[in-house]
Length: 117
Image (cartoon, rainbow, N blue to C red; front, side):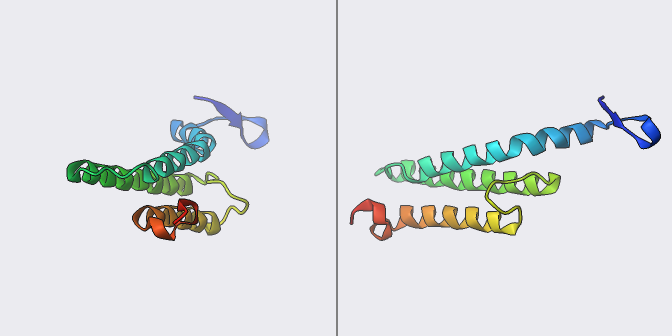
């Protein structure tokens, strides 16, 4: 266990949970960015023609979104920044809006300005 200054100069032992929270606070923003990047790469990948492969691709995209959601909830629970300029609920809304836009662009490519259609 690590120690930190306590009242009147005494040293207080930090609980493993406190140390774990500090580790999470530092690592979650990068983990969240990585998960979103992986989701976007998967969501914008070429759509499989085979029905079984398409279903697997859709399941993988859904799992990636669930992973992002779990990371966001964990970040909120430990008070970790999740990125963005403001550390309020706005960054969550922005992230979710980008994820929804990615899903929409994937399912409706003609609406995507980058698709050239």
